Image 1 (cartoon, rainbow, N blue to C red):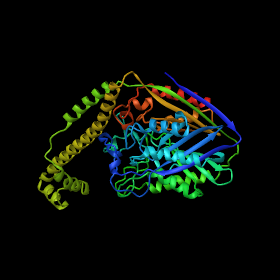
Image 2 (cartoon, helix red, strand yellow; image 1 turned 180 degrees about the vertical axis):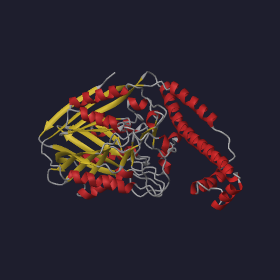
Image 3 (spheres, rainbow, N blue to C red; image 1 turned 90 degrees about the vertical axis):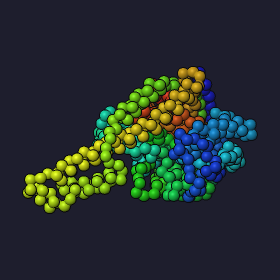
Length: 507
């Protein structure tokens, strides 16, 4: 089943309004979601604020609202409920006359906690934006930033893939295949829509970028993370009440750089400031034009649901194999650590000073050498057990995700799930949106195939559909978060990319 709305309006001067409303929450506002413990935030209020930002576009009497929220998702996980999107849309239609499908809400995907009354504050932001509508000129451009993010997937020598998470330990270094194609695959492009007031000064700057804003701040606490800090920099740099709206891109497999650093407190602010400055630098080169046109195409796509039972059984079998591979050893953690230090510090003479070894050799004895051989075998087995336990931890987390999505698929009727896809064009700025967490490769594919020079892609928009990996990544089901925290079946990628191209061609 497919629904479609296509509207195209043109006039000499586009009108727009903006607003920003604080939605910072506390630990008591967090929805209890044990499978997503990483989303939970400490009671510490943090070092910055979370906002809902609204950009209202008025063209030929038709309103379109682009809303950005400093939150992990629009429903499903985190502190925004599943009723938020439909409730906001209904209220905006009833009170302000904005058609539901003309309301586009993107989550930055930061893991902050929003306030309990985020719905009413979202409506408040749109209401305030509509009151301030003024004629604007439109400019589009690109920025570049490649120093704050990294691809988090790794190819292993056994042909499987793993990912970089704080939820579990990484595979051993010698298990990583250094020839992996995904290493370094990122999208450094910053998509920029700049709206200037006809009377002067920038009213709004929309910037699209692909990176998980999950770095955190020193001491923990609630934070809008790197995207929030970037927006601060842009708003301060532009001045005159300008509002910067961050639109999350295809960041499913993109982490902040050195996300797992344990030697320094996590701090998203430097990364955010760098992103903000890179965006400002590019925005300064944009020239706005008086002509403006708004087009919106909204369609539905049927996503095939996967049968996850075989993957669950395969992981359970692997779990059993790994448990059986654990072997007894006389060492425990207390004895392992000093022994490992001794054998690393002096590999040739670990058990005693060198003269003792030389004396034994002179006397024709090998007691110390025999002890070393025995201890090295103990150390080796203990390390093997540790690596097996680490693998069991990764497997257990991903198995839990597969079981959750298998249960959801079984509980919901039908073999497909309907999802919303929207194309929004403002001047020459074309934005395609989708509710899933898209991998960077799919975003790059859509950009390459688009008929528009300035095409940008946003995930985590108008709902939340968890991870939506490439077909290649789905062959690794159960090995990494992207392919485990996922309900779609293989073959979905072509359906999505074909639909994306069709929408873009209608703009």
